[in-house]
Length: 176
Image 1 (spheres, rainbow, N blue to C red):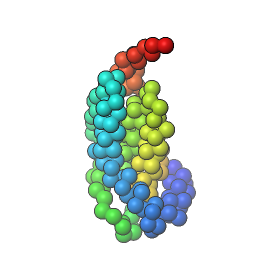
Image 2: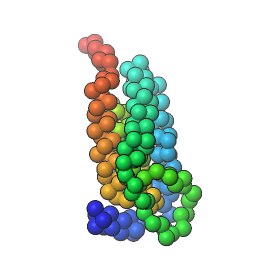
Image 3: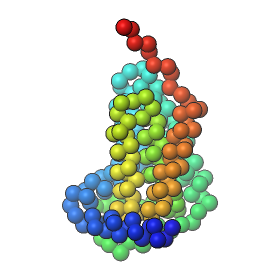
Image 4: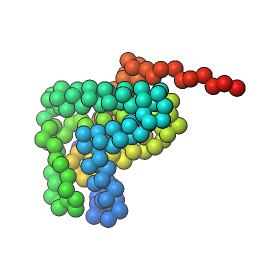
């Protein structure tokens, strides 16, 4: 894992200190705190129809369950330290006190993307935002790349499980 983490970190090192990537990744990391970006996207989806309202409610319930499961239960089994940062952050960020493994931002991002993309034409948007939020944690050096990869896999699995437990109501029939 350490080799993987070093290679990915070097790749992000080429972007660090550049105004546009720094702004994108710091804003994405900040919006990922407390699933803020996911609650906003869920609320917007919920405004479209009654079925989309169910998707938004499902997202809110699942986000709470996922956050508790990852941040309280799963992270308690691991004591991985966060990357050692010997750099000045160009923007302020909240640095969590929990274990670095797995990334809660990546877990919530991919869980939310799976849930929001369920029968929605905007699915590419949700996964793009998830990838940016997850990658932001490596860019800002709050997580190792392996923390993010594990979080993405756990989040995807959690989202798929939540879709099975709480399916959306059937789509209304389209009249010819």
